[in-house]
Image 1 (cartoon, helix red, strand yellow):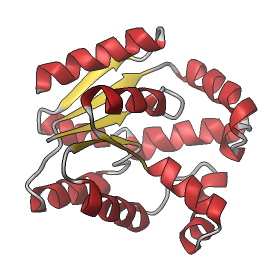
Image 2 (image 1 turned 180 degrees about the horizontal axis):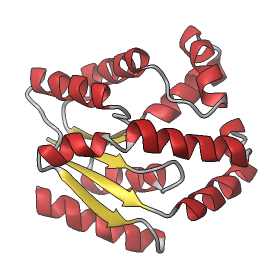
Image 3 (image 1 turned 45 degrees about the vertical axis):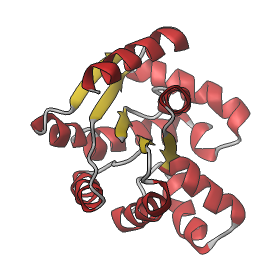
Image 4 (image 1 turned 90 degrees about the vertical axis):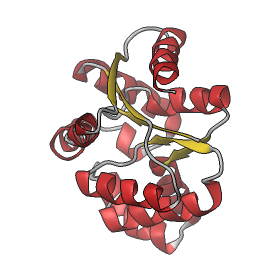
Length: 190
């Protein structure tokens, strides 16, 4: 079983690459952002509770996100996963490690996709033209998301660095070039 965390600021390409990697390595792909947006679109209680956080570019509360992942892992722990957008805080990472340990699993590698801020903003604004996502349409919200990432999420890398599970790749280039860099890291960790 292989568990991979794709890590990086909003707009770095995690979702795109996670889908490709999931197919290539026959893994499940879990995107907490996609789950939350789906709940919002369906008008569920979870979605209504999350909508305010998302529209402001803030992180969802740890307790809600961890429970979403716990529920997912109950039915998808058989072959490994690519986690896109989780864990986003050190508290989530610590709880996640314990959850995986309880089912006899672990994080194999966290890969940081490094992309400069101005490129991130450009990518997200471009994506916002097609996505219909409110958090992709405002440069102020985008920059807030990147700042929240820096303050609250980037420190999760320290957690996995201490476990010698952290790797970094250049997130610029064609989709194929970035994919090849990711596969090289994963193949070395297998």
